Length: 201
Image (cartoon, rainbow, N blue to C red; front, top):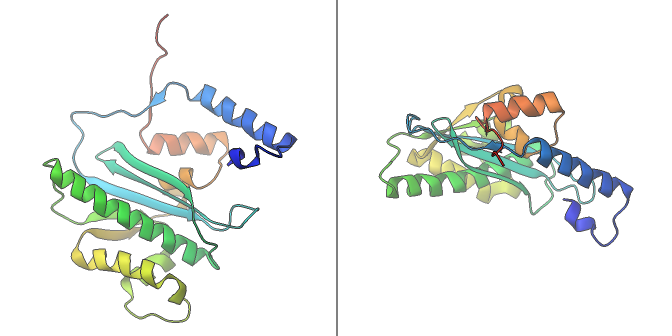
């Protein structure tokens, strides 16, 4: 985010860079841990933060996929278009997550780890879940009709199953907004990120 202000940076951008560097220093030895005893149960979390960017009011999509307790895929990305409501932003995030989910299921099958059942996808927006299960389009959903079809099609095929999760328990929230240190530590813990000891010199 700070890179777009390289030409005309101000003190607020410098402060943001210092905060990023403090974060990097504090998490230098965090890493992903893959256990040989971890199950091959595949599940996903998805979230969006509506109109978070004050410069263009685009929303942020965030998702993560876990195989057992191991993080295998994640993304934090600004949406390409402005959403007129939080539900539309959330549904666009859900469609992006669905596309990644289908690709990862194919990849797992190719690696001899097929998923025999629908992949649980946990989401904290009940309106988006309702739209995914509702075959009727109306004025409120016409702008996201393509996204509706993507998720709905894979629901019907049995590739995924949507579950509601509270915002407080949503680990994908870490990919959509900044958090105070205590909350950030909780989210990192939910993603099973391991902290290793620094190498000896």
